[in-house]
Amino acid sequence: MSSNQHDRLSAPLPADSEVLILSLLANGPLYGYAISKRAAAASENQLRLSPGVLYPLLASLEKRGLITSLWEVIRADRGGSDAAGAEGGAEPARGRRRKWYRLTPRGEAHLESRIAAHRAHVALIERFLPSRTRTQEPGR
Image 1 (cartoon, rainbow, N blue to C red):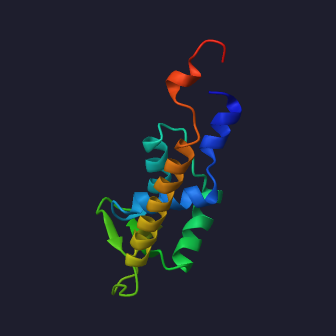
Image 2 (cartoon, rainbow, N blue to C red):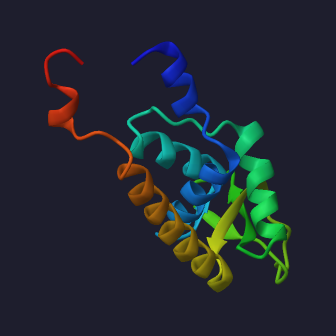
């Protein structure tokens, strides 16, 4: 694979990134860093969602009602984590915050629609591509 091809794979188009993120969230809630790591692992490190791409896209998906988010405070002690949110607690939680993203029913429907459109598009393109045996003929 040429360097140019690798760059294209590691920086997908925003519309493609949207489908990838929604697909990852279809398996359950994730926080931003976990989304990035899962995308890299699933693509054998050919796809990298940098923070500069990932977080604006997550904000856009949330604004459109396709995903929701919830902040969690990760405690500094060994006690684990406490979910923070509107309910709060009697004692303010200490530690760093992590934002979890979850697919909404609207996001699920949008993802199903995008997957169907993608599959139809791939099927259309496949009709125009030569078969492997044809491209391997001598003189081509």
